[in-house]
Length: 76
Image 1 (cartoon, rainbow, N blue to C red):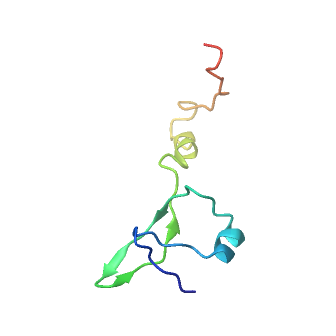
Image 2: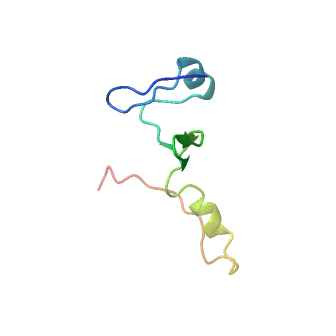
Image 3: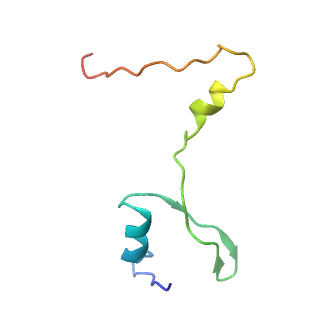
């Protein structure tokens, strides 16, 4: 599928792709430059801490990291 770079340097993902994959405005992507005039396909950027809790819970010393219920700070 082809798209165009705008005068602001923005690349527009066609609506068909956005709708099919549930891509929302503001969602971040990663682009990798392979060489002169060659780039890898865009991929959805993961959140900076995505998977961190799961990783911590796999700690070899069992019980060192435990999941806790989150509380709202709205009442503080």
